[in-house]
Amino acid sequence: MNSTDAVRKAPAKDPWQLPDVSGLVVGVLGGTGDQGRGLAYRLARAGQRVIVGSRAAGRAQEAAAELGHGVEGADNAECARRSDIVIVAVPWEGHAATLGSLREELAGKLVVDCVNPLGFDKKGAYAIRPDEGSAAEQAAALLPDSRVTAAFHHLSAVLLKDPAVEEIDTDVMVLGEVRADCELVQALAGRIPGMRGVFAGRLRNAHQVESLVANLISVNRRYKAHAGLRVTDV
Amino acid sequence: MNSTDAVRKAPAKDPWQLPDVSGLVVGVLGGTGDQGRGLAYRLARAGQRVIVGSRAAGRAQEAAAELGHGVEGADNAECARRSDIVIVAVPWEGHAATLGSLREELAGKLVVDCVNPLGFDKKGAYAIRPDEGSAAEQAAALLPDSRVTAAFHHLSAVLLKDPAVEEIDTDVMVLGEVRADCELVQALAGRIPGMRGVFAGRLRNAHQVESLVANLISVNRRYKAHAGLRVTDV
Image: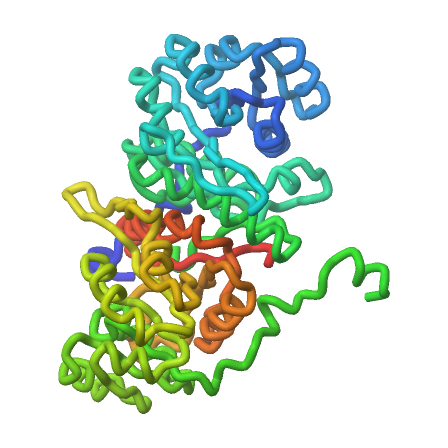
């Protein structure tokens, strides 16, 4: 490529060349739930140091012991304090209360919200719209001293937790306001074989990414699948 | 595969084996806009009979002549009357007025809404939430005698219109209440090389699919791409 080409098309650094996050400690709030447990397992299996958090330290330690790969367990506050990156994987119902109580522990931390506010009835899943616009924007409102991003919404807990699955065939949409923070989250996603982190906009556009899980649930029902998403042409 | 396997996993008919839609006439309301023109071009190039509609028949006929491949032009009402499947690709601003005026012409038709209600400001694109929940639900409310579905939201008009592009590398999420209608739309998407129609839920979950275009616009800006989406494990 000559210099003219370089000007015409930016070098494809992101999403392929991203910061080294291998030395960072990752906490998973709600790490005893399906999604949190699955993410903790995948990240730890990829060599990341992981602490799962729960309201009760004992429950977190039990989950950690089951997950292996050096995963530790702690109550949510200690999990937050000891981690560099904190993934929020609590149920939507406990989202505001959990984050509101951890404002100090999460100050300065890179917070990754992966909560999908959904309701369920006889017709399946549907989107719930938080007053703040999205779970991620609620997190940002409750945690003014944290660096809030959103990612890891569309993962199948079944695939994440299955030790026989070697690669997770999906891209991870990463949303946030600060490019450097998003790149760290993208890099974290990229630690998991098969996964790739792709920047997908600001937090004000998080609602549709969170809600799209309702559609993936429909896909999974119709096709008996564990659907993921790939972004083409990137 | 033995019969036990067949019971365990449903046969992969949909999305691969779908009804034959090659004989159906496809109308495109808003067929002189970027998205409508691009879809009309791709469908006609794939051998589908296509009529582009516009408020002014003359404008539609001009667009049709440019598109070639046997595309015809007509005013919106005639376009709707003469078509079996009617794609709604009008600007969001004219969505309610256009559909409200075509209730009779669209009665009994398979309507495919592909409108993305978006706003734009200095920070880029953002989702607009229609009172009805989504553009598709607005269409369903305005057209009680039509079979309303939603699809074709995430396509790049640039790629659609470029004759040098042979394949469109994306899945098309198809939403609707009636399975047979969705399958017709999936089949229509599958007429375009590279494209595949995948059922992705009911109309009440259309808002996030429509709004996700705001995220794809962010992807396109960041990566200088024309992003599409693939659903994995289907």
